[in-house]
Image (cartoon, rainbow, N blue to C red; front, top):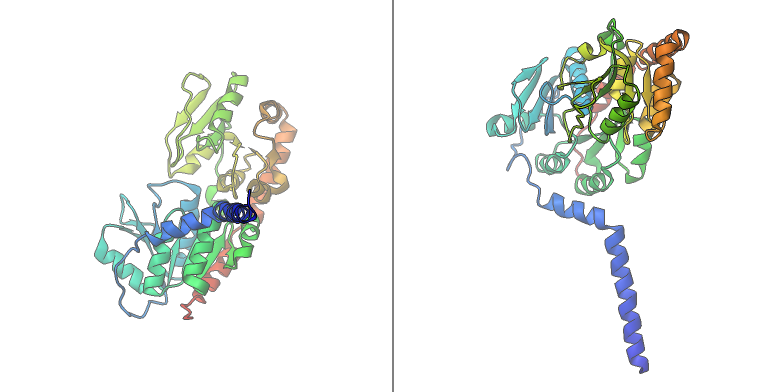
Length: 375
């Protein structure tokens, strides 16, 4: 083989390796860039109307009371605080909704183009999360509005990096835990931490101690693990609550499991719950844990970073794949009254410790400072 041919092959191998490295390393970012490029904003134009300093607008896929998931209830709790405590006006633009107003939050369906345009133009700040971030970022850029993204998980890295490129210093984040804030810190987006707000007094119930409960029976939340635990404890009554998203696991052949539909009246569930299970594979915080703890209901959880942060020492932690450990802890709580009472007291104390008023006050003051910054 001639020397020139060897050199050509060397160059070919070098560039092949370089291109392969680029595609592998930047695949997620490249994919997000292409996706964002073809994403349309909510409106085609914006007037130069001065924003209402007391009005905020969300651009999201779904909202309560139709979509009962932790992220939506977190958003709603923040909205209620802005409205009730600070006298602000809050709009939610949702892909669909069965109501136009919910607890003073105005809900506008996305296909109501006239009201959508008005709510965006009047807004001081736009907010978004979960799958609508690209369209919201394009809208924020078009209408020159600061954009706040609520970060509920660790699957937004490439997206957040792309929106930072697009909006520069006009993008902000509310992180639902300290570990989520730390996870995204290298992107350089200004952020604060707001734990999903749970006022313990609003979730206090007197429980009948009837069921061991799982809320949201999808695979990630542990629907299959829940079934296996119930099979091991045929004398114990289990309650599975249908979640608002992803395929739900129902094993109707297990006689000691009762399944109920998703409900906005979650206190009705806690009033029947003796122990809450959270065998989640991924959980960035775990709002339902704190809701249950507000009534002194012990929580057994898989030790995700979020559940360890939310539950603290009040939580009981078992690896989600160790079914025997879950059975042992449930049995101990069911048979050792002193142990149950000890964990119940610790749970109630943890829920009180996480009273949201201080963080909500910080959030309301922080969001007022956000303004559009030109290059």
